Amino acid sequence: MGIIIGLIITLGCVLGGYMAMGGYIMVLAQPWEFVIIGGAAIGTFLVANPMEVVKDSGKGLGEAMSGKTPTDTDYMELLGLLYSLLREVKNKPKNEVEGHIDNPEESSIFQAHPMVFADVPLRNFICDYIRLILVGNARPHEVEALMEEEIGTIRHERMEAVHALTTIGDGLPALGIVAAVLGVVKAMGAIDSSPEVLGGLIGAALVGTFVGIFLSYAVVGPIAQKLKIVREQKLRIYFVSKQTLIASMNGAMPQIALEFGRKAIASHNRPSIDQVEEQMMNSGSAQAA
Image 1 (cartoon, helix red, strand yellow):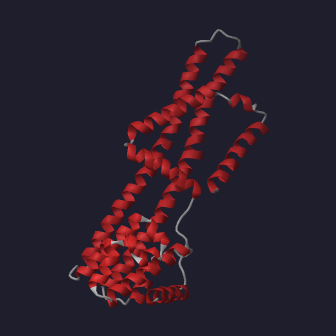
Image 2 (cartoon, one colour; image 1 turned 90 degrees about the vertical axis):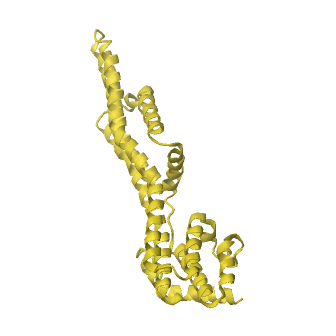
Image 3 (tube, rainbow, N blue to C red; image 1 turned 60 degrees about the vertical axis):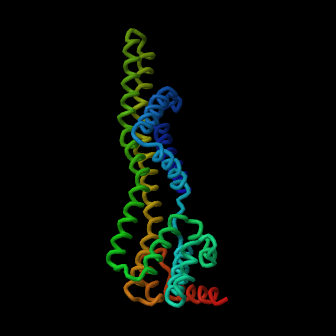
């Protein structure tokens, strides 16, 4: 929603200011300039990126438009799931805990936390490292290094679409110049025309430069930046999981391990200690039932 409002304000101010200066809006209606710039941008985007990145970029545009990031409720649910699992690890036989880890789709703990249950990569991340905790002889610093490596890999994959969109945004001004040059070539072919006709042709050519710069700095660039922010915030749940599990491996009680995870949450989304304690009580009551 923020992107739509921002684009409306930007476009309204740019076109409104142009018209207020006495410009004619129809002069900017040069469809073939848009075809040249848009077609070249799409073509170079397909040349530069594998199909997986192209598809992910389309998905990323939807993520940027929605702007949906983990909320405090999502973090509370994640902490509740981790607390339930760590209690199982501490109090239950190994084979009972393995039942939740090996078949999370059938686990009552995972089913009680739908946000994590629906996020398959996050669910697999948690299950993999709970399994290492169950092994018992894994060294915490080695597991932490492995977690950081995996999170780095996930981040690299999720940022590929951001880099692809940023690159094409950076290239749009140059593509606008290409369209402008072609327009000037067309104008030079009619050099013996009247000044009114020649002026119109040159004005149409300059529209290409305007469109390329506008799309780069007012549309594609900001959307790529928004996507980066959204995906960075979505990665935060992995850091919260990492901090909680590593604290548990270092000997912290489940309640204390959750505090390590809580501190990894950004301040504007971080639940209070009282909220976390209430979540732990609810999780404990659900397990007892």
